[in-house]
Amino acid sequence: MDHVPSIKKRRKGWWRIEGLIIVMILIAGCIIGLAIKRKPKQTSGDICGMQAILSLSPKEKQFLAVETAMGKQAELSLFIIKREKQFIEFEKLFREQQDDIKNLAEELISVNILERKEYLILFDKEGYLQRQMGNPLGNHIEILYSDDIFKSEENEELVGNLNENIALKNALNSIIEKGTIMEIISYFTGDIWILEFTVNTKFTPFITGNNGAINAFKYCEDKSWDANGYNKKIEDNWYLWISPAPE
Image 1: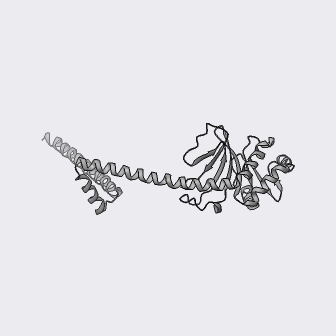
Image 2: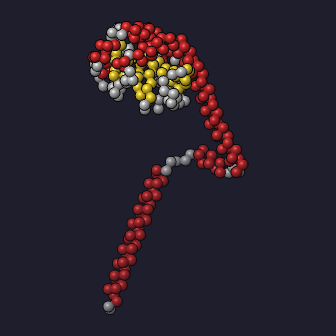
Image 3: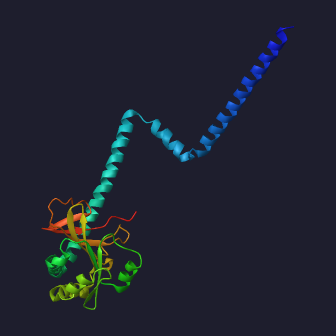
């Protein structure tokens, strides 16, 4: 009868093993069930499309790949043609006012107190006040020019000097009168300094596809500046900038 306890022990051991196997099967079933739920559902159209592609011969698959690539290339070509037409119209706008814009750039560059500093000049009082209430532009000096007076909450000495500069005021007044330029931004991209004149979208109805993003005329003296596909150089130091579509 000594063997009876050993048999009972074996049975208990098998029950434990069977129990573990059942638990493992249940866990595996739960994991598979979650994976199935998370898997994106395929429509009958997707399945048919996949089956159709799989049924193609190697030559047919190669032709399909080439055709797809050509389609993307055609889309890119159309975009480039469309953008070039927009640049042509945008340059016309620049040429109409280039004397005033270039004169203003020269005056700003000649102001020693502004030389190679990052600043923002606004012409709209409301916009200036909104920025002062919590929409700062990094380390830029924010300046309001309105009614022939410069104003800045953060740098009274600077605006004191600017208010004595009659030539700069005349250049700004000429720009403001036309209404094309909304604001002026002086900033650095890396070590490269850029002076940007943002253009009121009312004057650029021919620029479509960027959902009304603001475009600009840019001045940059550094020849190493990488003027990417959104810029177009029109003459020494002057570029047109058409903004990409907002994401």
